[in-house]
Structure formats: structure tokens, C-alpha cells
Image (cartoon, rainbow, N blue to C red):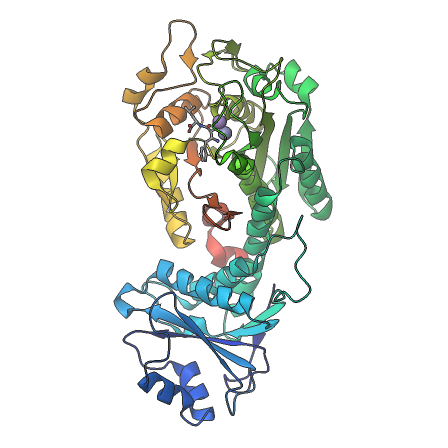
Length: 499
Ligand code: BES
Ligand code: MN
Ligand code: ZN
């Protein structure tokens, strides 16, 4: 989807679809007023008959309105003014985007930023509307081609020209590319999206962007480094593991980077502790932490953020065969600590243990976040609306939570108190990879914390948010928005970057 600006007024703009918002207790905004006048009161008449969608989530498309150059007018309900905050606005914009995608329009003009949104300025409204429309325009097509008569994608969307609009559209375009990358990778089937495939995508991205570099470690190189926890998980699969590192050198030479480490389990059968058969196909999404990391790196490179950023992906397939690791095994991780395996399905923390430790040792980051579809327990705790943040660093937690709110891609913090650490004690090793039923998301975080020793570090459990459950199942692209916002904040904010 391409974004442009227009100086035409609402009735004059030549487009397949004009998008306007209307709240429950609101008068027509400037756009609707202009259309109503051009259409000789049609909108007022429809409104008097209560036919305009004012409630949140509702949409209506009017065709061939007299006096209006646009072929369609799409009205989207904004709900009650008192409830129109950033999240409600994004939902309304996504609903509009969905109706737009299902129409046969291939271009649109978006007037949604006219709405008054609590605590949000014009820049924010433009950026988020663009992101919402791009989000709704996404259709998976890698292994299923659209039918000939299917509604096409929306090629371009214009916004009324004003100060800063072009900058915000360029920013949205870059973030949207990262989100789309994350969704594309997440949705791919596990027979295509293997660890080697993820490495190839990273190579391709590095070739496409100046300043983006790639390094790949294969299983032999990882064995030399004693990354035995990661290798143990991968050893039951014929698809060999990879460690993928994308480096963005946008900052000063020698400036410590911000690092991300993404869980890239390209398929999680559970291993010898095999998962039940129902819904096992969803475990192709177990590489969404890796997809997020790659998506963020793509956005960062497009935005040319003035900072150094490292994106590390630990990619393995968790299968079961004669070579697979087993419950009872004791594995010595790269940092020399021993882990007793109690459940081979708790594999994410095994690979991240080595991934986080390697990142700290090799890249000397100022701060590290890991991103992982780590626990079903996090889904139970937070559902699908929030990612779980675990860290002992209050300032870092606040930064991430604020970025999530700003990007309408929210997280919630869970405690990572030392009290929980005893749940992973065992007589046979430094720790076990299972913490029992209580606080399963947190005890997974506890294990990771032991490999982030001395680093500023936070863990983000994305198990609930990474894909939309139910039909159709699809990767959500989260939390690319939150993380790009967080990085931009650290680089001085969008104002500093846009100039
Ligand atoms: N990838 C799963 C976590 C998961 C489950 C994500 C469901 C999204 C939806 C992870 O590897 C896993 O299997 N975790 C186990 C841990 C348990 C064995 C301690 C879980 O959550 O059941
Ligand atoms: Mn698992
Ligand atoms: Zn997993």
C-alpha cells in the first residue's frame, strides 16, 4: 500500500473510496459536511433515518453519491466521544480498512484524522490510520493464490496534505513493511519456513539495505561455542538450527547497540513430551519472536534510525526422533550452567538461554529484549490483547509499556521477583526447565534471567498476541509496532528522526 497526500477537498478528490469517521454523539466533521453539501443533504437524510454507522466497529459504503467525485464513501463508526481513545480509533480505522479491502476499490482517501481522539495529535492520528489501513489490507498469498474475481488490494491511499503528514506517512510505510514481513513469515507453513529459510530471508534483507549486515552461525559453529541448550532442542530434526544476526549500524561506531533476541522455533511438536494433536498446526507460529525481530530490523533499516540495533534469531525445529533430547537429560549451556530437562516442550527457554547469553557476550548491548511465544500460561494470564513483559528493571519496563501504549500495541507487566526462582530448583542441575503449574509464564522468565546476568534485559512473552486465534488464524505482526516505537523513543522520538 502506497501513501500519498492530496490538496483536493472531500467532494473533489478523485478516488475509489473516501473514508470518513462519525461518532455516536458528534456532529458531522468537515469532511462529512462537505460531502453532505455536495450530495444535497443525502447524508443528513440518511442520518435522520439512523442509517449512518455511528457505533464503534460498524461501517457503511455509499456508492455514487451525487456531486462527489469519489466512487464510494465509506463511513466508519467511531463510537462515543468519551471512549474515543487511541485504541478505539485504531479499531475503527481497522474496521474501515476491512470494509475497504472487501470492496473492489483500489485507491482510497482517508479523512479519519479529522476525528478528535483523546490525547492524540494530528501526527499520531495520520500515522496510526495509515498503519491500520495497511494492516487490514493484508491477505496471505504465499501458498494460496487469490481467485480471479477476488477483491484486489488497495494500491494507494491519500491523506489531506498538512504540516508533517508526509513525514508521518513515510514513517508508517516503514513500520508497515516490518509488520507485513512479520506476518508473512509467521503465516508461512513450517515445511517452507525452516531455520535455513529464516537465515536466507535475513541475507536477502541485508543485501537490500545499505547499513544492514548479516551473520549466520550453523550447527558446527554453535557446537564450537558450546551452545548446547540450543543444539539439544534442534538435534531431533533433520532441519538444522541456525543463529541469525542482523546488525543495523545507524549509530556511532563503538556505541553499544540495543539488542533483540527472537525465539524462532519453526515448528514445535513438543518433542518427546509431545503435544496433543488438536491445534498442533498452530505451532508453526512458534517462530513469531524471530519474525518480529526480523520485521523490526527491516523497519529500522528503512527508517534509517540513528542508532545501532542488533536483531538475533535463534532458529530450530523441535521434533522427536532417535536423536531427540529427552526428559531427564542434563544439558550444559553456553555459560556453563546445567539445565535438567523435565519437559522437552519447554524448548523456547532452552534456545533463548544460549541466545541471550551469546548476545550479551558477543554484542555487549546496552540493553537486550527477547521476544518469544514462550508459554501457554501467558495466554491464560493475559489473553490475546497484551504481551507479557518480565524484567527486574523498572525503568526498562516503563519504557516498553509506554511504547506499547503509544503504538496501540500494548503489553502488561508480570513480576519477576526472586520469590519465583525456587520453582526451578532441582537436585540434579543448576536449574530445571519446568517450574510447575503456578505462574508458568514467570518461571520461564526466571530461567531466562539466569542467562542475562549483569545485562539490562527484559523478556516479552508474545504467546497470546502473536497471532489471531480462531478463523482465520493469521499472524498479527505484533509486537513490531511496540518495539519500533521503543527504538524510535530511544533515538529521540519521531520528531528527531523525521528531520
Ligand atoms: N510454544 C509453546 C508455548 C505456546 C503454547 C505458545 C500455546 C502459544 C500457544 C512453548 O514452547 C511450550 O510448549 N510451552 C509449554 C511450557 C510447559 C511445558 C512448561 C506450555 O506453555 O505448555
Ligand atoms: Mn514447546
Ligand atoms: Zn515453543
